[in-house]
Length: 111
Length: 113
Figure 1 (cartoon, rainbow over the protein chains, first blue to last red):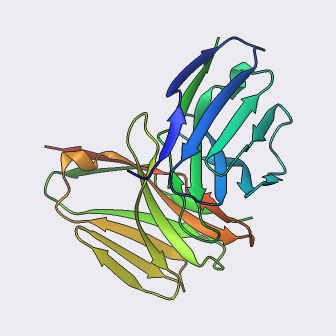
Figure 2 (figure 1 turned 90 degrees about the horizontal axis):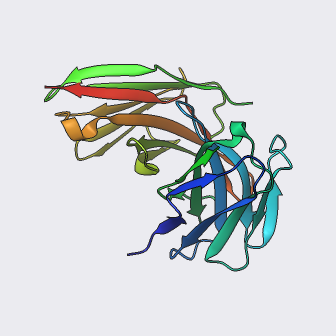
């Protein structure tokens, strides 16, 4: 089935240890998004890719980076995770100007 | 920027109707969405409405849009225990290369027997 897949579903990392979260899609959408969702809050957009063009939100910390090597895959890199970065990370995809479809999310725990 | 507000909590009995409300400040969105999030899961698209419509019905779901009052609602008929979740309204802001969503604060729906 066409879908948005996120791996792993749960990730535990140590304070300051780089971590990478993965998202893949079979929908062939040209836009991919990364959101951060903290407990009991709405998702907050970190950045998005339109094809290979990277678009960062103004208030996204430099600690968060992203890579999109091809249409299907997009990665979220957290260079030096802090305790405040523990959250659910959601990937979404869409065609330009159309509905966003979300993956199941990766829950990140920072020890 | 856009402010999108929802009430935090709603409790209904199984079989009753649920109405989840959403108010917003910026009326320039083309599409307005409702997403459902179950515990520990991602966001599931439930339905959406085009901004030039007043109402959309999709099986047990009815979306009402009052543009004058900047009010969006989601009605769930015959609410079931499986409907227990957090419901987010979201408004799009088209940047030309992406559909950037502004989410409401989320309403937790509890369905009791």
